[in-house]
Image (cartoon, rainbow, N blue to C red):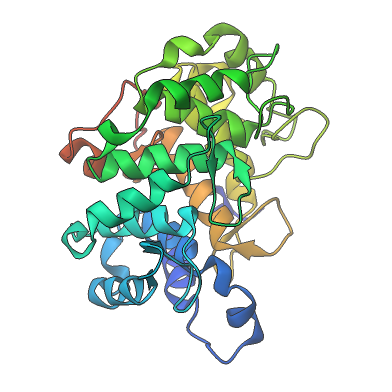
Amino acid sequence: MSSDEHKLLTSLHVQYIQNLGASKADLTYHLTAHLRMNAIYWGLVALCVMNHKDALDKDEMIEYIMTCWDEEAGGFGAHPGHDAHIHSTLSAIQVLTIHDALDRVDIPRVTDYILSLQQPSGVFAGDSFGEVDTRFLYIAVNALSLLGQLDRLDKDKTVTYIRQCKNFDGGFGNVAGAESHAGQVFVCTAALAILDRLDVVDIPTLGWWLAERQLPSGGLNGRPEKLEDVCYSFWVLSSMSILNKLTWIDSEKLTKFILSAQDPEGGGIADRPGDMVDVFHTIFGVAGLSLTGYPGLDDIDPVYCMPASVIEKKGLRKGWKALPRRTA
C-alpha cells in the first residue's frame, strides 16, 4: 500500500461522487434507477461528513427529488415515474432535511402514507406490495421523527414487534424468528433509541456479539462465518456507538481496512480491497471512519445516519458516543 492509501483520499472521493450519474447514456445509469434516490442521500451524507456539502448543486438536487413525488400514494419513488416506497421516501426526507427544505413536502400526506404501511403485528411493509422487514420499521420511525410526527405512531405496537425479533445472542433479525444480522441489529437498536426504549436491548450480550464481528483483517462482517465488508463499518459501529461500546473493537485495524478498500485512482470505496467501488460502500466507509474519530471528518449521527449538526439542530440527538476526534 502506498503512503497515500494510508489516509482518506477525500478529494478523489468528492470527485467520484460528483461524477455519479453524469453519463446518463450509460446502461448502468438506467439499471440503477431503482436506487437513485438512495444514492443521492448516500452521496450527500458522505460529502457532508467529508466537509464538502456544497460539492453537489443544492437546487438541482431538491428539484430532482420533487419530480419523484408519487401524488397518488403520497410518498416518494426512487426515480421519476416510479411507485412510492418507504425507503426512497426516507431518503427524500433526509436530503430535504439536510438542505432545510422540508417545507416542500406535504407532511400530513407523507405521514399518512408511512403510517398506512404498518401491519397489525407492528412491523412495516416497504410499499403496497407488502414485503415486511425491520428495516422498513426503522425507516418509518426515522422518517416520522424527522417530520415531527412520531406521536402519531403506535409506539407500543412497534416496540412489541422489535422485541419479537430479539434473539438469544442479543441480536435482531429482519423478521420475528430470523437469525441475527448486523444490519438488522442497527435498524432495531436505532429505532429503539429514537423511541427511547433501549431497555429492550440486552446491552452486554449484544455488545459482545457486535465486537465478535471484527475479523483478523480488521474489517467487520454481518454475521458469523461471513466475509468482512466495509459497509459493516457503519452497521456495527453505529450500534456500538448507541450502546457506548465502541472501545470494544480495534479501531486502528478497522481504519486500515477501510482505507485499503479505496480506489487510489478514481476515488470511491469498495466492499473490500480490490473490488469495484460504489457510493453505498463509500458513504458507510466514510461514516465508519467518522465514528472511529478519523481526523478531519465531521460527526455523523449513528442513530439517523445524518450529519450530527443537523440532528442536534432539530433537537433529536440521543445519547450515543463516538470515539474522540483525532488530530492529523
